[in-house]
Length: 290
Image (cartoon, rainbow, N blue to C red; front, side, top):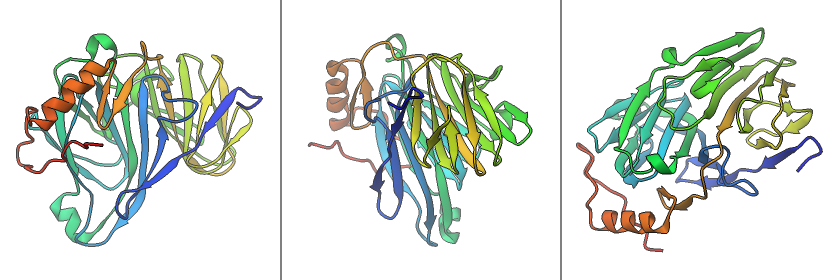
């Protein structure tokens, strides 16, 4: 913990076959920030013609996945029958609840030409009362997400509420998820409205409450008061946080739950192939037995 009341979370880089992902959450000492229990920065990656991403159908429970891209496109399919391409600036919000299955792939026409990809994949743990809700999916194009502009600062409210604006994405608890583009030598104040807050630097040199934040690191703010976020170079950031989770959450593979029983039940269901299938995508990722 620094003197300014910040703790820095370092990324753990994973190579997913020529495609790097920086995982920030769960981290140490913070497993969660607000409802966010998983935070991956994908790319930037360049795919040669004929290649792309192929995340085969896999299940989730107890969470919502929130996908937000900066470059490229992903084709989402799920067991509700949804087929939805996501482009930069859009948000895909998929509520798993009691169980959903989805795949994420590079569409055939983009694969032929080769493509770039960069974005964020995050999971929000659902409150206990919503843990077993019916699965649902919603897509919100960039133009529907509220913007807040000041000289040299552009903020976009991706999910939840901030700066007096509210995103149309269907949050289950107070949520802060805001994209920021900021010019060199500009600053803004991150309000104290949310119980837990953090700043992730995708690119550029910034300070949070006067403390340097290295690129691809997250600064978690310990105190409940406004802080200044200042750019030393042109920068791109994400603000995340919200209401603290209502109790501990367990993560096992792609499952999030408030109890071991829910995890075990989901494992058995996937092993016995009792989740709904993804129409048009017959592959699947087997349950890890480790």
